[in-house]
Image (tube, rainbow, N blue to C red; front, top):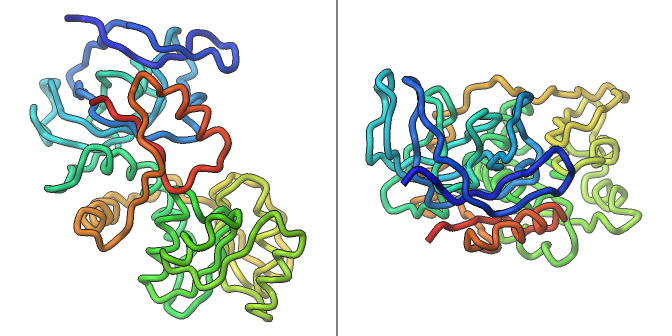
Length: 308
């Protein structure tokens, strides 16, 4: 067998996706071939493509599976290892396929004993992102943190990690997600649909919060409005911000190495010390529905595609 099923982008046209058969990619001496068991769904999956992309191109950047084959220079992993991983901008294709090529210097996390492939696939991108964002903010116990867009995969981890660190957390999301955020440890919740949500935060913390994390696009400026003088913010969203009121705009630390912390997070999830919420599991044949759902940016927790 030298072909596999994959969800691909067929051309440079927008939304030109389909499920089809493509060749199983060959690996080089520094790569591994992974049999994909579950796929984490993210907003970037449909358009994180290599510059010299060849169509049809299997989309996706994170998954979990079993190593099927290793290149001769791969020494840290072996056939049969169960891993979760991020493989972004890989010219040989992404993760929305029965098999994926993973370079040995990619973000790879061994799956802890007892953790399902579905759970493992939901962690790498969101976990890596939130750990880097929190690294940028350098939160201290008893500081207050506002999270804009706190009910998704990144926010789910951010609330819990910050609360466990002794921080006082507030978050914004639609009303239906407020009980969910409080169950994770948020002390204050606001509905971003309310025109006065920034005033609600200021009533809760009259001097402003110590730090903010803007996850959803176009939330950075409003998040700055709830910061105290000298507060700090990191824009996971990529929003371009203009400093004022002595606010420190922390650049997102793309190059920070948080692999050890990410392994720790995986172990905490496996032991149920950190909650992982998967809103919906899609069978692979309905993967395009998952892509449409994540595009709405209204998922609670994480969406996952399962190959079984």
